Image 1 (cartoon, rainbow, N blue to C red):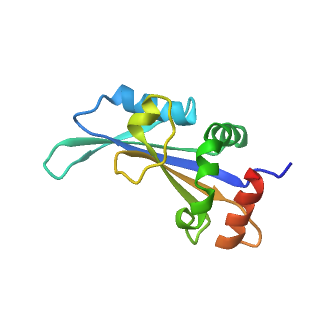
Image 2 (image 1 turned 60 degrees about the vertical axis):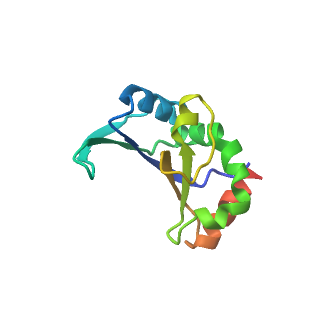
Length: 139
């Protein structure tokens, strides 16, 4: 079996004044499991409070659990992998926040998303090698 090339997973989402913070956290937990969520408050354009929920998973076992849970989503995005991988070897995935609350993991281009960034390890370090490592892992 090929070793998991994902080094860590960062996540970030917003909780707007019209949303319930507990439900937004539940959407994050549905995607990532029982993860520590840091919450900070920022001011929106119209002076309204927006909560930023974010964190990072670095433990290899936890990263593996998340990848296993999200493998159908990642496998569906494989044909678009080049669009989602940056030059630093980071895979960017946006999941619909409302669907995640219902335990459905659906990629989205919408702003109302839980944004995941996955740092990929490959040697020698290049975008192409990171893409190859992910493809090899999910085959």
